[in-house]
Image (tube, rainbow, N blue to C red):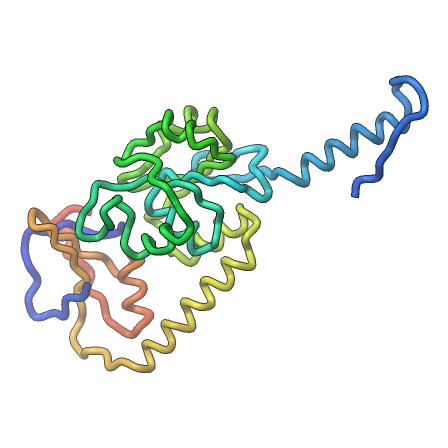
Length: 255
């Protein structure tokens, strides 16, 4: 998340909290031109309904060009998928906390999940492969970074359905949303999501007065404090609004 956990509090700063031609042969099944044409036609049709996708855990073949039943094994990725109007049927959930609903879905997208009847696939940070299997997905999407990193479960998940894993800790949400849109055939929607965000940022920036002092973006969970860097998604958002975000001192915490 590009943040550092600190057990000291900053002072003097502002803290702010994604047709085939019907070829038929007239006779037997010999290696005729018509027979070869039919086989080629079938191959072309299969290629049109699936695609090969390079992601952060490898390359997955036969990814549905238009998936119908996506299971997300990453709460981080679920938000991107819902923003893209992707057909998510179920998602990993975290233990409920102040930043989630009662199911463990993050509050920033829990309403969208409810509207789209997204079920809880399982609760916790390690994929429950059996529960994912029971949901009969045609595509699984997850993370290869963060607490919900599913790389060590990649082979097992890939047996259930084509699986795509993405890093989300070293990329802007805009770039990740654009990449997901391309891989899922939702490029147009991805462009709309990013454009709408940029428009809203411009509106907010024009409507607010930014404090002169620098800002520290902090999350305090009572046992430790996370201070987000200017390169984090949170820090980039504040910077785009005109804030100057402090870089946490590297010698007083851990990333």
